[in-house]
Image (cartoon, rainbow, N blue to C red; front, side, top):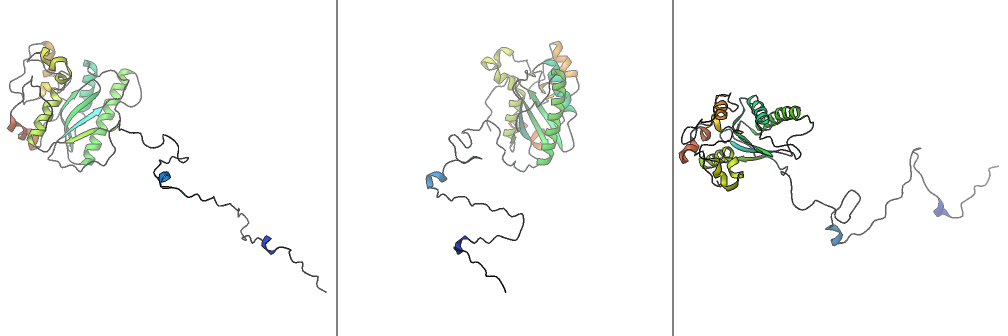
Length: 262
């Protein structure tokens, strides 16, 4: 005789569970209807909170995609130095930077002109492509950082964020960029560098090896003669805009001071 089967008093209490042994029942989160005002609020990792979101104003070089480069166009590159490092505009540090530049040239990457400033470096470069520029500058920055850190007894980065790049497409743009890089020290000096004299040139740049001056440099002081006789750290230009094109607008005076306009 079979026993009677007991039926539950409340059928709604019966819960059918999956056969999986490691199944864990989870309660679905409560849905909340958002308003249009909520949708416009910035959202962080833990939800909306006052002051969340990107800060206004950009203090660094934007990380946008670099434009594709063409080998016939030179570039004006600016590399910022991190805060806390003493000015590299000193004889020993500037020479270390020049040596690092001298061993950074390749067939696809060349530094034609440069100048060392208190917190940044300027350079006129040639690059066969965007990849060649990135690799060339990356290698040069590494060589400069190793030499400066060893001399200063420090560790860490030397250059801040990404470099700033400007493509030079016309002879006038190239002339203005060369003038700005080589005569940059005069722009930063009081009274436009007038007290420096019309024969002074920046020893922390490639002025001594530049062949586009309106007249030869006056080597009337020992440091000028020593610098002019030292090995050249820059490479000879190969593209038309840097060899011939920019000279259509005239050679550059050693005391020329004007704004950097394209």
